[in-house]
Length: 204
Image (cartoon, rainbow, N blue to C red; front, side, top):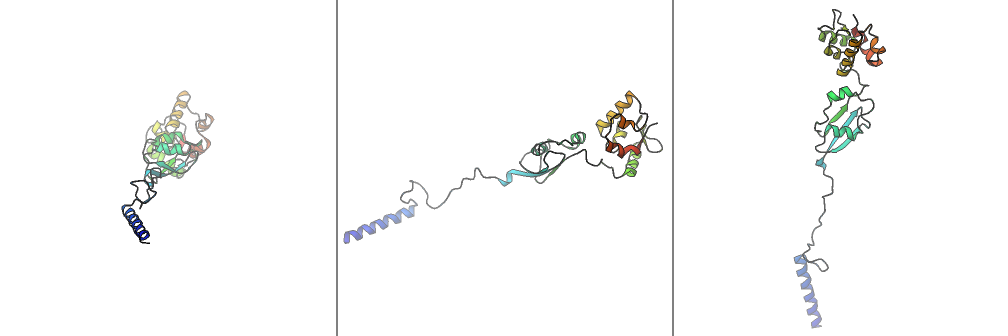
């Protein structure tokens, strides 16, 4: 009985020392018994991404998550690239594809279906055209003469950008316009744009 009691006491003392040092039976030598290590190397870092809204003439408008440091061009690519209704002329001048994105930013790709810039109505557009067309292309009635208007005067018209203005100048150089309707018969303008500016131009 005495020997059994001594063995029991010795065993309890050994276990107490093991607990105190953190090395329990069955654990590798040097292991800590009191904590759990979680590997977060593969977890998502909420500070490492941007949330941007891509709208307008893209294939798949929507909200996208992109890495920090992404550019406007990356957002357009994430949305499937330019859509079939993109206004390429305006996109080239209004979008800087190399610009860095910021969190919460909205990227709007111009569409040919957008209202012409500044076209609040034929009356106000006519006043704008008359005010800016003080050169050779405008007469006392404020109408822009398609046969003499400068590049800038043509671009002041609703829906006319640099490319279309250049096409009008090239067309009149080949053969002067006989009427305003030549803009349609020569396929220089679409019907929607033509209707927006037909009352603002003339042929003298």
